[in-house]
Amino acid sequence: MCSVAEAKVTLRIAPANPTAVDDLVVRFKTDRKLKPRVHYFFEMFTGHSEDESCQGGYLMRSNKRPRKGRTMTMRLRAVDGADQDGADTATTWCPGTAHLRVYTVKGSGPLGNRVASKQFRIKPATGTAGS
Image 1 (tube, helix red, strand yellow):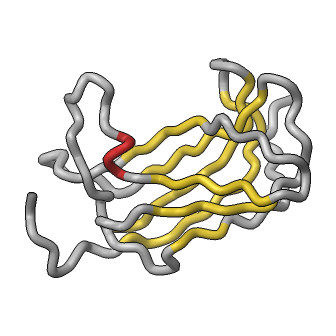
Image 2: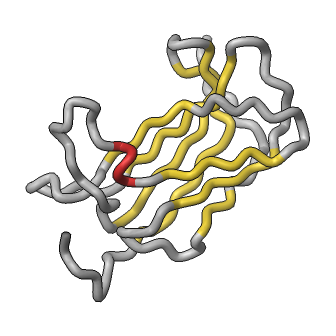
């Protein structure tokens, strides 16, 4: 029998009302001490664009391992989600509903337990000059 156990951890995202050009800062208070080689893994999916001009998916592993009860902080930047080979050059988030999930992962193995999840809205960027 397989089930996804989600801990009672509250994700806080700043800014509270992000736009497509904002860096996102995710914070949560850790509820456990991580075992050796276990890390937090952040996964975020937003709406997508047909012309791939914005970042619709984001995956990042953290090397931070705060003790139980400490605050874990992670900065998510759309430009960091670009492919290593340069194929994806999006520098903004896709506007719309975003789904953020935090998991534990051991080494480079499969995702472990879901620690927390949150759904929020990313507003379109307004008044920004194109680069």
